Length: 431
Figure 1 (tube, one colour):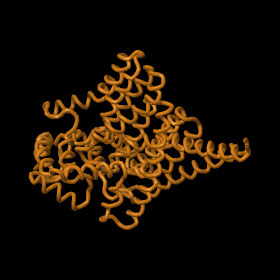
Figure 2: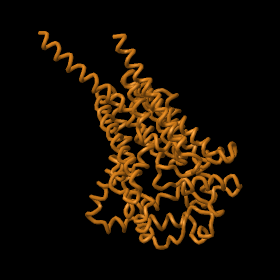
Figure 3: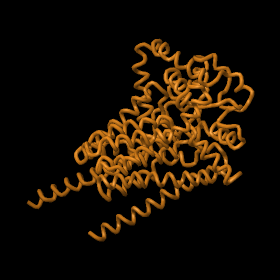
């Protein structure tokens, strides 16, 4: 038995070293460019421009026009690294994201170990190290890596909360939900989900509920106050929801490919220039709150025009979100090598998805309350995105840490089930 355990430990160590080497290789291969070699299009220039405008004392603006199109968390991180590291800030950010990616997996593994033991924790760590959707964001100047880390923090505290129902994990839930919303606005769903979770146990229920709802509000209050000031009460948190809702009908993948760009501009001909730029074209646009209001006003009519076609559209969006079909059938504009990389990533994701489902089924037997909280988390975020853009990138930071966390218990469950069958077979033969 000791020999078996020692052999398993050596295999685990070798897999960890290989996974770390792979992740480091991605960071090195990316070099010092904003756009990585495996990116088919990126919002990185928009985040970088916001960060530079902050450092140039132009405020959170484009062309000195106030913006709330993107939450401020990631541009603030970029601005801090520009100030600290100068021209080498890109490499420094990627090193930070390399570390955050490893911490993300470690948090998922710790949660898996709490739920299903050491075998599950080790399996989760290995799956997380090699899961392409958690590797690719490491080298990109985008929000996914930081957001996935905050999601892992949130899920780790959620597991503890559903086990101990304590005030400390309630603080962790509230703060991680608040900072997560400042990085990606759709993470704001985590706060009400945490509130619903704490209500599942009467122990100090109202104290914990107050913490998980008020802590994120305190975190985002400076952003809300700023928006109230510059937009005079016409914007609460973001000016992107209208655009995302229009794209959710006419360009549901939200891609930067030419065909979807043309469709989007055909739907909104009054959008006369680029939004995220310091050029004079930005000055020809109305204020963002007006753009957002016009976009939201169009949405009901766009869905009415879809009629019964809305059903296959929603099914396709759900498949893109959960099965990454957008990375398989809608990448014709990408080079062949890029398409093959994405196909490999999708297949690896499917393996983790299946194991994650198995993990949830096992969890339903041992931690029933938590299992249904996690089901509400996954279903709620899916429903939240149905009217909006749905693609793999939007799923990664909110769902993939959850799937990795569940994949370890799923693997342990399958291993134990196989061992049980072999043991039963051996006993039968002996008898």
